[in-house]
Image (cartoon, rainbow, N blue to C red; front, side, top):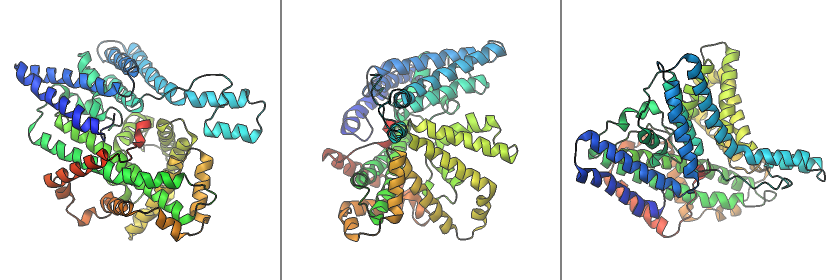
Length: 488
């Protein structure tokens, strides 16, 4: 189940809100009793929500909850000596990262083994293709592992709790069910934002749901739903059509259209989902931090990553980059730290060489900026040229991210520069609806936010109502409704 579905919007969410606010009111009692009861209700609905992705994976998320809740007691300062605390921390890290790697990389590992050791009848080029595409020979007869929904997000949230407890930055959560809610709370369960425990610890026991925050949450949810359904989904159909074409005959103009549409699709898809998550959080009395801040108006790659998927960047900054030494070290060491962070960023996204290359290239670009090019960007008075350059680089790297294999990414990028121009083919890909969606995508991506009343638009109740009505209409009519980050 995803937020941008009829079932969620018309059945699941209304029932959850009715139970969340109604049952504690009927039960009566003090504020603490009502918060506890509402936590349990939200936990039940969160587990039901997660069960839509596979009932069997409830065991997995339960295991993650138990391991990290128990590790918190072991890591807490004052309960045990430093050796025991470190063992607890290392055990939690190995467990969480081990589960993540198993489910994400097991299939790729088997494919590599089969191609190298059981590919006697394959040529070197065929083995290389199998390795870099992640497609095995089937020689070992091992079934493919299905990736559990949201595992990349809730394992990182669990780790943030254990690490923060070890650092003595937060107190342990003694209530297992409250901790389970932190891990499995459905608004941010399957696609973030990645919530640090220290940012939400007090809200688990002391919050005041309802009122203006509830109304603001509805508006924010409707706005995110509109971004996802009206813009991202419309552009997705164009992207899929273009990417399904034979690359040998794809012209440059159409290839650029496909790349640019995907650049906007993934932004509105993911940022729209984050808006919905933040809005849902407000409906239940939680305040989640922003996850996007108009990344396509960035003047540098460094600024782009300060604006894109902020919760992931913040997680790696707090738990990897700074512990490695951050920027308070030699230039060589700082470049190494950047490289490691973006190597891990690529790995985090999945078991495909495209993600690894995508992350490594970003790391190299950031090192390039850090050593030299960043100063040129800073001194350039024509900032729109910076933004054009960064947007172009980001678009090319989204091609790598979107491609099934590195070879496909290379061929697609080659067609972007050597395929010639075919205006008729380009026009055939642009229906009236697609043109409108692309126009809106450009307008609301941050390029013109300084010149329009953005807060008025996002916080306007009438705009929210119109977006909700149009989004539901599109969903009822069976509009194509993929979700890119559902696979992570």
